[in-house]
Length: 204
Image 1 (cartoon, rainbow, N blue to C red):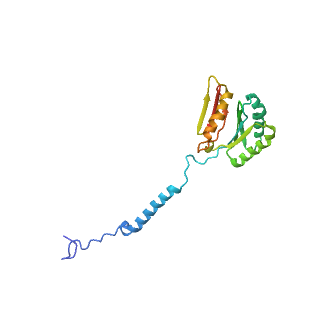
Image 2 (cartoon, rainbow, N blue to C red):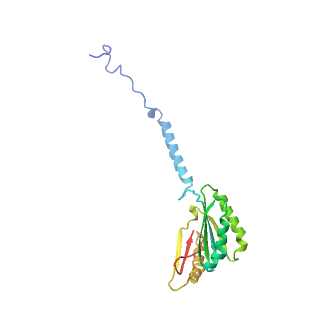
Image 3 (cartoon, one colour):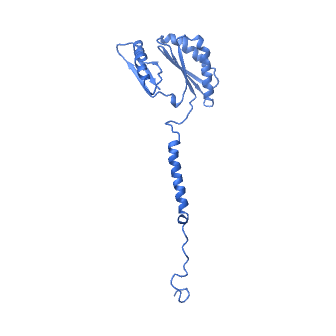
C-alpha cells in the first residue's frame, strides 16, 4: 500500500533532481577550456627549447695550435708551462694534457662547487700572462666545457703515403676554406692523431 496521500498522482512526492554543476556552468567551463588550449598553443611557439639542458661542467679546456712544431718541443715550450700555471688556480683538482705535432690540449678540472664563469676568467688570465713566454706562432683558445662545446662532426684524414705535415696542409688549406663558406660557419679545432699519419679535426 502506498504511503502517499489518497488521490495524489504517482511520483508527486519524489524529490526534484538537482541540476548538474557542469550543465549550470557550461559556458564558463567551455570558455576556460578554450582559453587554456589557446594559451598552450601560444606557449608552444614562444617557449625556448634546447636539445640539452643547461649544465656547467667543472672543466676548462685550453687548445694550442702551433703549426707543425714537433711534439717533444711542444711539450717542453708550451704544454708544461701551461700545466704549471693552471695548477694553483683556486678550485683546481686535476690538470691533464695531450700533446701532438703542432697541437696540444690542456684540460683543467675544478670541483663542482666553484663558479665556472669566474674560473674560466682565471684560466684566461693565466694564459694571457704566459702569452709573452710562448712561441709567437702559438694560438691559444680557452673553452668552458658545456654541451655547446662538444664537436658535432669529426673529419679524420689518413694516408699510407702522406705524412702528418701533408695531411695538416690539406686540412688547413683545402678542407677549412671549403667548409668556412657554408652558412653554418663552423669553427675548426686541430689535433694530430694518435695513429701514424692521422689528422683529426672536429667541427663545432
